[in-house]
Length: 419
Image 1 (cartoon, rainbow, N blue to C red):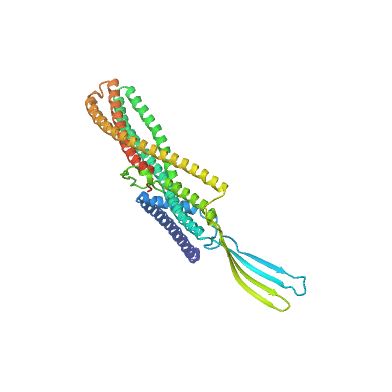
Image 2 (image 1 turned 90 degrees about the vertical axis):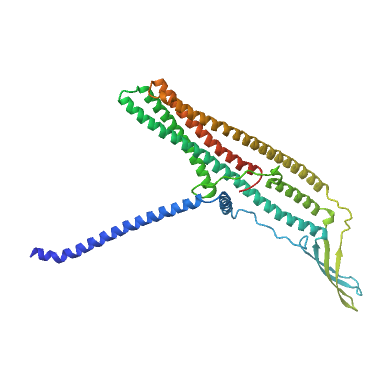
């Protein structure tokens, strides 16, 4: 009877337990699906970032920096095509103290108009402002191109060093296991074992420094671009033009700024003095007559000579000196950078040839000294040293090839060629 009494109550309990279990399983499946979706999205995003070329990356960087600096620009000013200043209004009232005298009232609106010469200078200034904005955009793109080139190539150098250090550790660990077996079989002394262990420790210490350096460059890349992974394709062709710095954006920006300063001085000269146009309404009242008069007056300066104030003249000369000095300094700096990079390129090419020759000789020495392995501790040490030297030479050759690519990229940077 008791079992029969509990039977109807246990069914809802079992049902609730089943429901709760289903809910827990569903939540677990949802969590698993969310993790899978996030992992797949992150992997897809990583692949997409790695497939970008450097030109696309620099565009992403420029747009990112523009968003960060949005709203920080100074507000612009409105300019008039015809007016040289604010209009003024003049009022005049003259009352006669004679019974038969006349009273006069006059109102005038005065408009300072830009002279034809002044309007031409304004047009030149607007055109120069557009050219300067375009040159500034190119300079900004070149600036971020330089940061990206330095970052991606430095990371590539550190990554190459890291890969060869990992190869060295793997090779040494294999030698360590082999030497451990020989030591346990009493076929070798502990000297060779300790020697390999010391080399492994040194390589691991070096690996930690290399990982830290690589992580720093990767972090800098993320801060610049907002992307998680560096692109795979970073190679660039060498610039194939003579004296490429002649069209450098910074030089062009200096030329445009100097021309803008000259035009501003011309716009302040006597030839740019405004013409004054007055719209006049006058009332003349006498006992016999009440007369209204309307008319215009035009005042044109006789600027036969293109003269400026002494202050403007001194400002122009000083600006010319400063601009010429900056231009010379920048030109010399660009020429020096180009020559240094050209010499570095020749040095790296010659060095690569010698490294390849040294690697071939090192491999032959390893084969010749392989018979020494296992004879005695000194002979084994010589063979291990030869093996490590050969791997180091191979690593230097790989790093040197990366440096050759970096040199081409920085040559394009010195030539003023953005990504």
